[in-house]
Amino acid sequence: MNKPKITIVLPAYNAEKTLEKTIKDIPEKSYDEIILVDDFSNDETFSLAKKMGFKTIRHDKNKGYGANQKTCYKTALQDGADIVVMLHPDYQYDPRLIPFMTGLITEGVCDVIMGSRIRTRREALDGGMPLYKYFMNRLLTFLENVVYGTALSEMHTGYRAFSRKVLETVPYEKNSDDFVFDQQIIAQIVHFKFRMGEIPVPTRYFAEASSINFQRSVVYGLSTLWMLIRYTLHHWGIWKCPNLVKVK
Image (tube, rainbow, N blue to C red; front, side):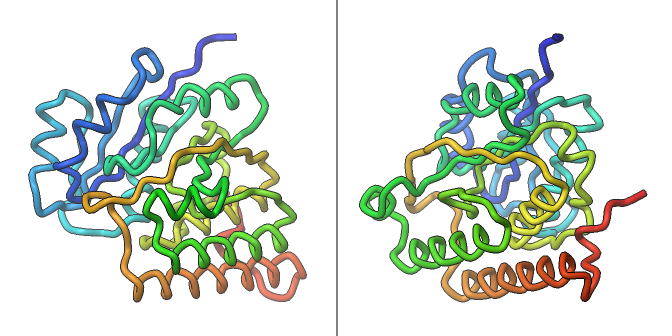
């Protein structure tokens, strides 16, 4: 078996203060290419990334977190990636786990690996996760596991690794340009019967780490519930969900 090409994609917005620290912690020889997509940051994220020497793309306006991911995945596939790791450049997730995530995909154990920050309530809260976010995370993850028939500890992590086949199969470009993109692609992964797994990652919340506020968290939560309803209606044959129909 040939060694797969591993590409790390960084969906970036105002990540100037944490980018270098994130890149420094990525294990050597654990990847073949790094691609950063800057969603029209207000700081020097784009120029710093170019200075660091990896492939850098800048949106001509702020398009949203989901739109950023779409550019990341499309570019990685065009560049021949076999495994794509999404890593936030805000240092909220530990880059040292990348070889373990990609290894489970390389060995054919899983098609998608997610980094779970929820091992215990105490660890999550001690890591700085706001109490309301913890309970919203737990509630939504419980409901998603019930609807999807899965048994994951966290559905709301932004640390994920995908096989090429997953990204070529799921119609992720039909998804929202906002934060609910993360949940829509999970619904697609389950719908197309790919195997998901997870590994534990430390919880890191701090001033420079990106995080949505309470109001946007509520919108995100309601959007996730709406995705679950649409998924259920689609599988009951009541109402076709466009996100779950593969592009021909």
